[in-house]
Amino acid sequence: MRFTQRIPVSTVSGAEPTFSIAKADWQKIEKAYGYAVPTNAREQIHDATVSFLRFAESEQAARPVSEARQQLATVKKAAVDLRDALFENPQDDGWDARQYATHLLERCFREAGITRRSQALSSLSTSMISLIVACDHAQAHLEKNQGRREGETWENWVCRVTEILQQHQLPTGVRKDTDKNKAGKPSPFVSLIYELQHLIPECRRKSTHSLVALAEAIARARQPHRVT
Image (cartoon, rainbow, N blue to C red):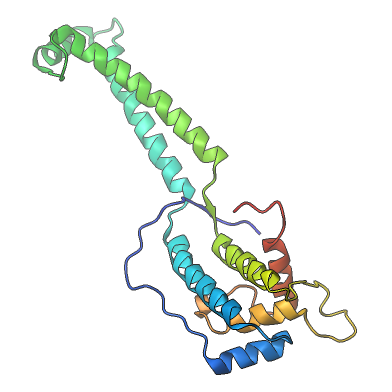
């Protein structure tokens, strides 16, 4: 599945996300998980989930990398066009008019720090060349650093919950063969995430159509080579 790459910054307005896990919710979670979750681990999981919801909103609001790429292309084209308009002057029928227009520009143009008018446009040409080069470098940065990946916030949440449970010596293993194992039951950690997801907004849930799909999504999220 291909995901939309998004820029690493976004502007989000509105209230902070609200989230709570009631005592009855924890009882249900622990029943599905098969293990008691200590109070401090509960608090850490709560805080991790609030952080997930906050950053998920930011992730959703982030604009695609393609839009930043297009903006750089627009700026570069404008710089090239301006440089060409000012300094490409072939000896054709319009040469006199362009020369006269450039002469007027040099008379009227003022740039801070430049005392001689004849230097002003030359300095502008140098600036345009620098801007064009800067656009190329910025484009290269975009290609090398693709920004945030759609769904990355959910993956980070899963990894954080994994860390919390591991710190308390609780099981975090995940089988991806739920339909094939003899008991027909998902791994305890998959059941825990499944129950936690029922407490967050539906739009923030992932792979809810089956426990097998959820197990596979969790396994992908925890791959060592995953970019965070």
